[in-house]
Image (cartoon, rainbow, N blue to C red; front, side, top):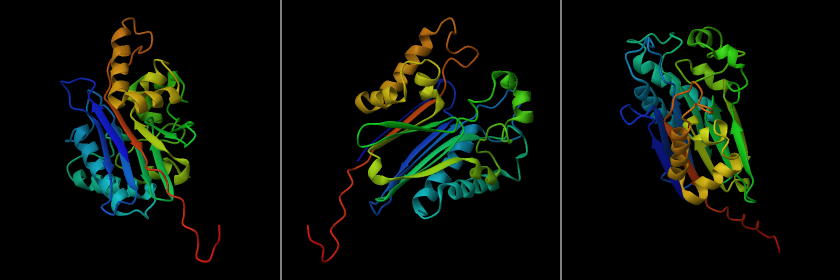
Length: 275
């Protein structure tokens, strides 16, 4: 099995708010990927004493442990437990009801010899390659479907859209948000490789239109995860007139995790069968 992980801050002078892990159980059966993209806080605060990197480290660590150690627990339940655990770690010192309490997007994937389970919450992405080379994106597109006019100010977003029906959801302090995630299960035999990416890396497709999802996956597979991030950085620097970035930040934290799964062995014939 081949795995590759790259996570690069948008600004070297600021902490990376992303989190990424690959967990491989000691049994050698299956594995898991967790990718979080911490939501950059507003200048007027979050009601919390802790930073976004503190939050993503605690949530990501808890979620990695749960997805690996509790393979029979559905991913949404594992996320709910991880959110509760993280909230308990700072409930007594912080205002967890604040709309900008530290929060993150989530992509989690867990595979076994039989299945590949996935969970996506908010605007990070999962790409899955089938044995014939077809690449399928799995996305939570609720944020992208909102009109730009509704996202004009932080106050509008926080007041009526963030973690509300009709808006979009992120992993913050409420464990019940896990039930809002996009989830599914694929047959293991139908997955050859996968990539989990934060939106700092998916800019290559979603902001710059440099290719489609299959093209992006091809860059990662053939040239490596760092090559994709390098391409994004070059496009960001070239966008001097803000044609593509508009009012967005010039550079964002960018994380790419690529996993090429081992080939699935055919099931042994049942006793007494002939072939």
